[in-house]
Length: 111
Image (tube, rainbow, N blue to C red; front, side, top):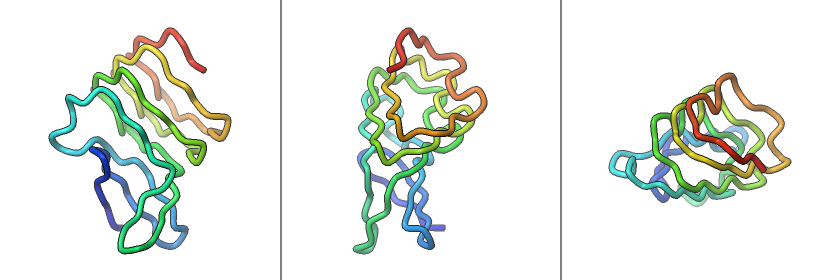
């Protein structure tokens, strides 16, 4: 399984399905508080559609803002575990949210 880093986010690439999963925040970007997850990432000239936010991808981070594209269909277990964010917009495309995905957040608004 291949991995790439784009705008401070590490992605796992699945070549068989041309999809990608947000794995975690890349080293050196832990203090960044705003993230825009792209709808697609490109590696070696191949586009991969970002369909998942992986398990513990943003755990123990201070996130003030995150943009989740409509391509995402799944949010993994503990994806935002203790991320301290106060609001999030989850697109209608998300059909699966894992166990304890938002435990320890300061969520006051879910759109």
